Image 1 (tube, helix red, strand yellow):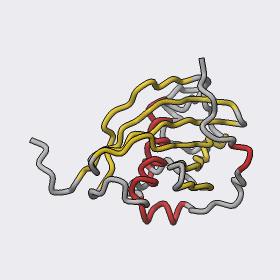
Image 2: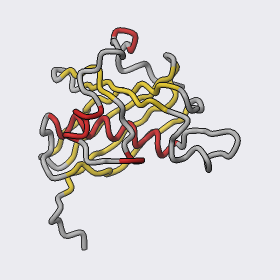
Image 3: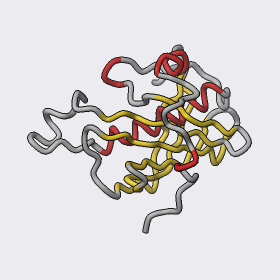
Length: 166
């Protein structure tokens, strides 16, 4: 059964972003085909909530192969959109430090409906826990035209350039 929306998405003006793609690039490291966030329209530091969107165009890198003749946005790309939104919040407001915020895990992810090109994927992420400046836990949801498309929880972890991964 779908969760209740984390926020009422109808209260936000998606035509007037707080942060544009250029602003997002100052915080998030992803570039080219891996940029999966178009704009941010709302930030509430008191509730640790952020709202943004991804314009899903007919030029996405996955269109030709997923699925030929019937393009469906891959679930992993949907999760990447949510991760980039949560990552922006964590980095902009210095929740856990580090050079980057990496995926630490995902739980309770559910895909409710398919997402097609030429739609706007509205996203919300809310921090539920920060631990010792090492990880941040988020709940996330994605909507198209007010319909819940996917949801779940993710962990973001501190990643440093000089970190020993051995």
